[in-house]
Length: 257
Ligand SMILES: [Fe+2]
Image (cartoon, rainbow, N blue to C red; front, side, top):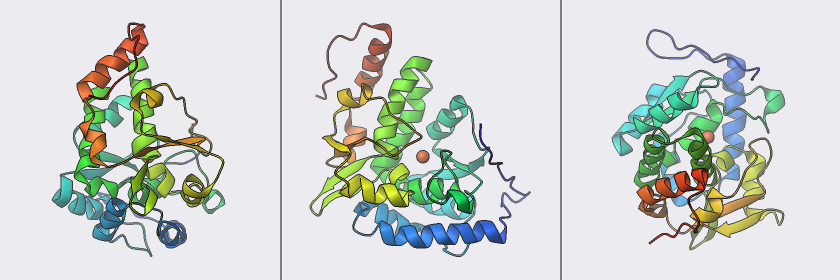
């Protein structure tokens, strides 16, 4: 359930945002452009520069898609506020990123449960210009379509602790690549600087056994060493392992080899 209503594109595929909605985008993007400095990873910052997002208005999907298509063949498409999982996975499998077409109200500037257009465009789209990340997201959609509902929810943990809330080691220290963090002012600071959360080295087995909450700031994060780690996972083995966890036949930890 959500109180937000998706905005419908016109015949040309454009969405007409109000002055208030564009003003909310401006507040969010101007603040977050500052917050991510020295906190977001280089791949994200490069993607953000390439996207050249406007600050005074919400961009259209076509503007974002033209940059993504040229870099990794992805595009963004407007969708309803909440969409069925099958539709979500199918879009990802086709290198189409579903973007909610509403923006949060000012009263929820710092926190909302539903992913809005600021989360999709500012949080995820810069990373979709990175080949390893873009390929991983497509792989996730393709494989989620082939497994059981229970296995989908376990695979969802892999998506959650990477695409949404992933950290990466760099020569300059830990940086953020997860879109759930980078679209949140408070969590961008919390994820790197708070003493509260646990920060684990990237560990697929630990991730597959780690439940998460979508309605509160995270209690733990996983840190990769390189974005290519995402797609270099022995992916078929993960699918087999996850299905084994569901039917109880997996009795050993998943080992990357
Ligand atoms: Fe997201």
